[in-house]
Image 1 (spheres, rainbow, N blue to C red):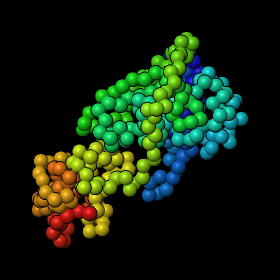
Image 2: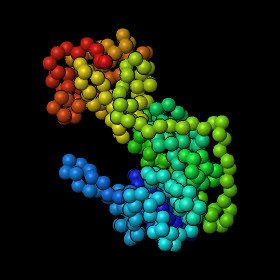
Image 3: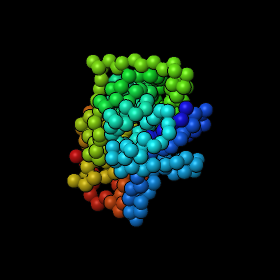
Image 4: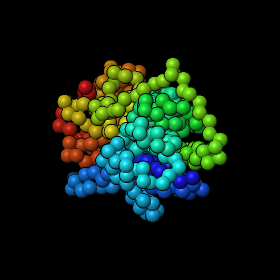
Length: 301
């Protein structure tokens, strides 16, 4: 089948790589336009854009796909495959050719923009990937294929994203096989079990030590690699890069050790800060951070 691929993220790139190795032909890729990035504010192509060019695949970058439908109609394709594209698809586009989506959760659970983070945040033991028909209502289309993936209690966002993308690429090629042979089936989602998740912000990275150690650790696993996590110390945000749960107890938010180890009590046990950002902006171990702090640290906010 001739596939029109729509995607913009690392997740998308991994899925695209799998499809390019399949028996199907990716006739074109649509991705987000180059954006300013870094201190130099240079325009940077998406990783999908770069990867497509490396594989001699035509690339289109539309600021708004909805305004460029006439150009899209000129592309000769049999089916559209979407994976973390980043734009809303119009009904006009959906009516043009079959359109399916690679979604990294077990729908109807975790519809929306942050399904991977949400699975970790909630301490789920299982997640997965769904291939679904795209409809206007967010992630509510019929299920074509679905496969579960066990979720390690220590896995962090980037590793899980990679695992789900690998699985998503495999399922996407299977779904394309089904369409090519006209053997696809559509199973409606159970609306009574739908869970919609919101877009997350940097403020969600705040580590609140009135929560349990597991809740704090799950938040760190989910958000430290994408949004960043931080604590509040004397009104200042201190970025946190590595933590672990320790079997110590004390008053919530109390610093239990603050000379060579940075341990903070929470609702049940405690969290040890292993690596964080110094006031200079450098990433340092906890001991170096504490040595650089003028006053004794008794609690966090």
